[in-house]
Image (cartoon, rainbow, N blue to C red; front, side):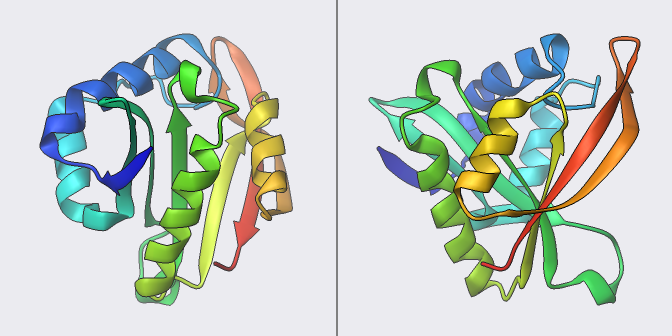
Length: 159
């Protein structure tokens, strides 16, 4: 497995992993699919804080972080995302991506990484607990998708 910063050439593969999850699952609250333009902007803004895992020449997943909230008081806190292709789940890809992302966070003087996980995403909850994130909050009915209210579970780690 190769871990590296994402490039614009990775955009179609990232969209192919991310957008079906937006369309068909409750792992994310958003209903707005990612576009090549919005993803290119994220890659340009985040640089080495947007990583991909490549296996056999294919993108197996990605992880990134960005600002948690606006304002200088939150400059050392970031919110992360980690998403894997179905075939990559349970194979250590997510752990490898998050370990490298934590390295990037430390290099950028990020003191706190926040994970905001859908309460319906039991595998992501277990994953965050397994890699040392502390469950620090539960927001009942914080989001709405597919005509139902969904809880948000917050995780925190000091990388």
